[in-house]
Image 1 (cartoon, rainbow, N blue to C red):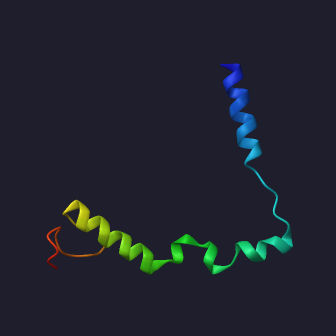
Image 2: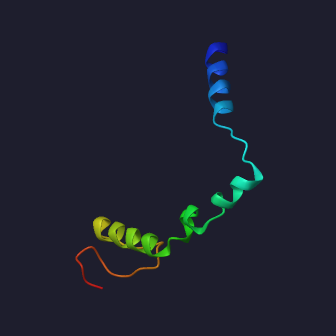
Length: 68
């Protein structure tokens, strides 16, 4: 049990990184924000609705048969 906790602690600390102020500019670019990709999100919602044969939660209408 103690060994597993130690391994988990070492892995979680290894994932942390310090970002210098001059590096923050690259991380703040619009391309780094996955939520801003509205067209891609809408397309994925459409594909999901068509595969599942049902709609809901995405704001799209129509059924899995291809009719709108």
